[in-house]
Length: 297
Image 1 (tube, helix red, strand yellow):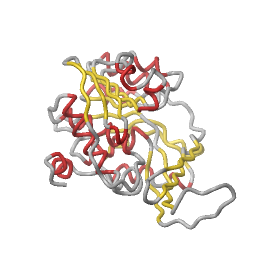
Image 2 (cartoon, one colour):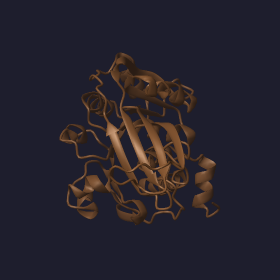
Image 3 (tube, one colour):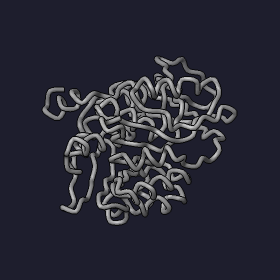
Image 4 (cartoon, helix red, strand yellow):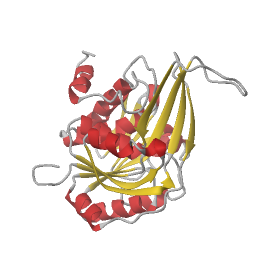
């Protein structure tokens, strides 16, 4: 929390567990391959973004449902150890927690992702959730499930800026879009709106950004359009790079950067993450991001 007891960022999202295997190549049908490396990490779009923002120096809280099962046992401890306040997570121990199995090809970093969303029940915002959101500077959301949409509307009504990670074109996304101030979309989402350039005019918010991996990003602000190249990096795994971008983008805004500069800061953080297998272990510190931005990393 900040000194006044509030948070810089509140996220509303769904924690996952990621099982990661780095392989000599992606398997063919009916083929067995020996893994070169394995890991189990916390995952999920908003949760990983929250971890990134916390590692970059900000006070962060996360709300949402969290499921049970053996592979979910580390979700809450991992988030808390990363500095994310988890009081807003609502445990559902009898429900199956979301899971991703991610196969990463050594050398190229190509991936296959298998995922199970689990069977979590819908949740409602609590009074404590609303108080945390109203006292925050930014709300971060991604999946447009009902509690996230309600959180965005509540944040908007209390003057809290809403950052939306528009990753998948869920049919419910218009319910969220009306409350968005900054929209950071994936190239896959932008493709449903006619491509990166065309999407900028159709995405909600006063600021819109489309991330395009190695092709960099394009964006628009009230000051006009912009584009930025990607930072060259020897990528081991791009898992979580977009999630880290979103957390780092908000961290950049909190440092007083304008949206274009915050996007550059976020691009550097996402690039540095790619040096390590998984979405969380490679998240950089602020000093590491600054070093890359200054050409020292």
